[in-house]
Image (cartoon, rainbow, N blue to C red; front, side):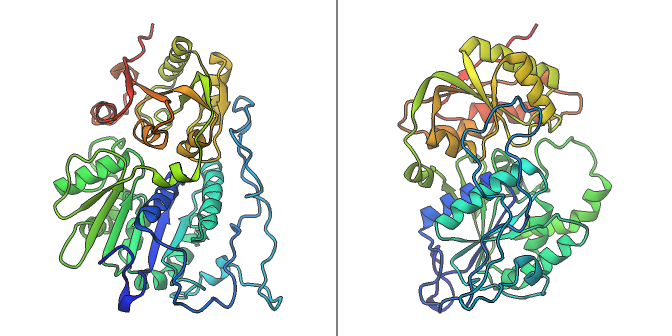
Length: 431
């Protein structure tokens, strides 16, 4: 079946589930590569417009209190403003999605679109802010976006899953950004789709493909080794079912769309390269500054790297290479960023879009410094032909915490070892 083929010659109905801005960016890259359109041109027009404003009336902060006082690279715009009540052409109010989705199996206007993006909204304010901006870009491209407050209270999962049951059963293809997500794994038990696509969720994609090839249970790389916890045991049947569904068979095709190196390809899995063609066509080229910029990481927040050692490494690396700006990861804490700003003198920038888009829009430093992370693989692709150099600094084993997974050092080294078109820096020697 071709990427656009569906039932009886109609375009395939594709549902994409995303929980982070990077996942949504890579869904747009995948759709661009496969030439998907927003709607089925043979379908009759929808009688009422789909509301396109996310349901939360509260604006999401772009810079948290104490984050160094720096402004974001670009203004956040009105994405978080309180929405007006949409109405149809006759002036009747349109029922908002949070009401319609509680009807089990209920469809949505335009659900026969070639691509509908379902945002399973997280609670983190920074992630939500970036997701709102990415959702706006997806709408600008003509795709339909369904914003689900999937974590908005005790009953939210029941409403979300109930409202998605019908579209899930009718979908020809499911695209997901995080196969480790318990939410996504649960949704996979409902779908009958013959085509499953996994788009990049950063370095986690490398571990997912390797685990699938080895037939292992799906566990994030930074999780500490040892016996599964009570919640893991309770969810084990769902996780095992998801792993089976993500294994190709005579009834199911699986594609991995990735810019990361895939060294262990599971039998029957199609691996498609993501070269950020949509990003390069849509944005830039950027204005290049003479200085250096640094990319932050959430390795402290995930318990892999010690906070004090990380701060020392950032300070020494910035001093050695003349970096002036620090692009924070969306998961970095405000307290940590405030301390970084105070002790390093770096300007802390909270991007309102994934860094690949921020860098492509510019201005951006001639050198970008990073620790092992997804961007050492993606930025060289997004910035191809611009002359920007990406330099990666190794993580010294002495920086790791006692709670770090035994696999952490090897995995992080592998992220650096497999990066293409980057300059490798030795680990900073700390006193």
